Length: 179
Image 1 (cartoon, rainbow, N blue to C red):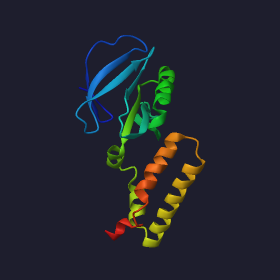
Image 2: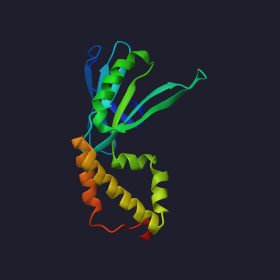
Image 3: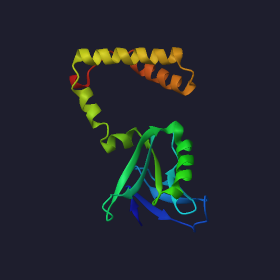
Image 4: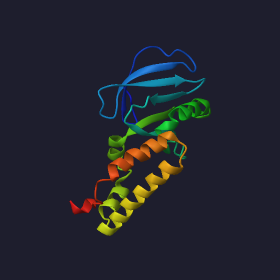
């Protein structure tokens, strides 16, 4: 068992050559069991988990030399919308042989994001807003959703805007600090 990026891998089966996916059972993100795919390239590999219905972002990362010749450091390319998942897998397969270590692509849902602490500054900002600031933000959110519904050609973006609008309308603007 090897721990990499908080994932416990239990590899089963032989590697089958360049660009052939290898399925791995792993326990990730508090889920019962997920299946991770490993694509081997000429001299490296790409590790990823297929997105599930509740995933909203993907994280693209790898490990690189720290510069002192002795240590390694994690490198995150960032979080990207889950809609671009296949494009990132294709990119990673194309880049893997140029890198020293594997590339990891992991889908993230809301629960994963809150556990990372990345959005803590935003949560604090929202919590500390006054009632008038919160009301203004609520009105801006509704206006932006309506603009997306009116002007955007992307049906997925319109569907998300509609879902957000349904959640916002009918609720009075209420600051989280009021609770």
